[in-house]
Image 1 (tube, rainbow, N blue to C red):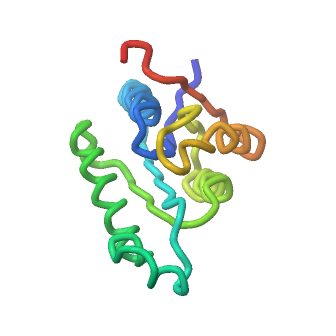
Image 2 (cartoon, rainbow, N blue to C red; image 1 turned 180 degrees about the vertical axis):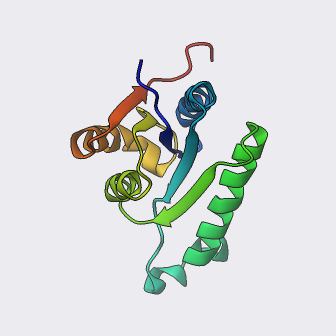
Length: 146
């Protein structure tokens, strides 16, 4: 079995991405590797629309700040104190591929579909990642025990 040392997990906070993360945690600990979590904020309204929607969604900075907090809370809840966390806005496919290259990732573990905006499209995102990265990609389905 390959010794994966740098694992990247795209997280959309769905049950499927949580299950993918749990698998990544086990594999990371088994191989004494490092774990990087990435969350892509899937929609940031343009300024001309921001005035029409509630303030909670109007600011890109606020959306990133909330996503960072949620990602940190999730990591702490799962006992991850020293993992790297990335939150970005933009096209998920491109940003995940970029994170693979920039972080010397040798395995991506991601869910097939999630429940949030990006999650509804994650099947195509997972497929795009498989096609565009040179490392291995483990695509998991929902937790069979859930």
